[in-house]
Length: 431
Image (cartoon, rainbow, N blue to C red; front, side, top):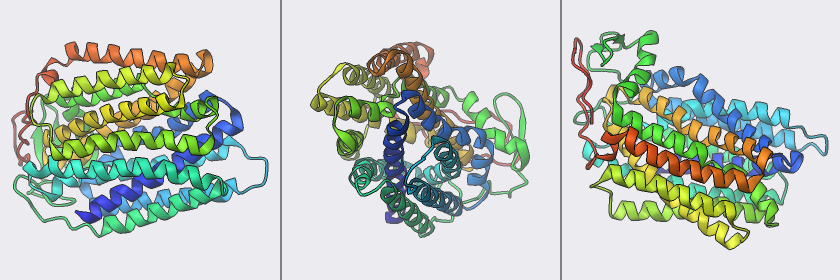
């Protein structure tokens, strides 16, 4: 477990250190909210384009090796960025965007493989316990990473990027040290597709389309499963549309410039994401959410929207910091519920593909949301963009309560469905 938590910590720290530095650098070069949004969109694009390949790789091959390969690719990208930004003058955003695109490709493979490992490491009833602790490691990274990047930025833009490369390499080494059991009750070991072999699985999903373990059908199973399971679809769709309108984090460099707080102030604003989420995650770890799961999810999305509006209207750095704490605490509840519910509602041999699909939703919510905020910010200003985004998030919470009624009514986390065996003809067991 220590290796998993260490890999989650170092990989997230690397990502957030790099994101903080590049966001401020791009804004200093262009003074354009739109370019901040484009930066996130470029990072997200590979996750959408590679969803079928990345998900199938996480299910077909050893997830530790897939994760390590993605982390090493990210380390090389960070080194290339550090080399480029050391130029004394004439920096352009185009090479930065192209290298971020390469980073997104590595992240597209890393994320579903790493996130599917907790469900393979412990019995099903222990998944919420492990997810909560992995979340603590990730939230610690959201505190340390931005502060790390902000403080090192003053020594030279390239310095935090070299540090990000070292962190990615450390994450690759740690993930290779993870020990996965051959089999747990109701689960399969790392890289296994089924108890009958890679080419033997034949089952029918709700839409009646047969799928095999190899080829395009296997890659598309994740998409078909999400579509067939209303609670899974609702959980990740709610995240997509809520954060799509509430992508205020992307505009933090513009807020920092507006409030005249510089790189260190920006680092603290981004660190507030980890402080709020980390505190909430500790509370969840001590007192896990066990009842009224659906109501808690919708309540968290509503709170996220309210705090987003506060962030948009304030002209006080202290209140902006508090608003970031509130937003991140609400988001931590949403992330915990979704990260626990989706793997438990998915057959073990399909988790890589389903989580790859979820990774696109997450990327869309964060990066497309950031792009939307950047476009609106360019047109209407930073304040209007954030406030309208918060209002949009509240509308999503209200509409989602109607459209995803089964999700809102979920009381407890679902009992995991059994592995799909050869010749199975029933619909997948839903939550």
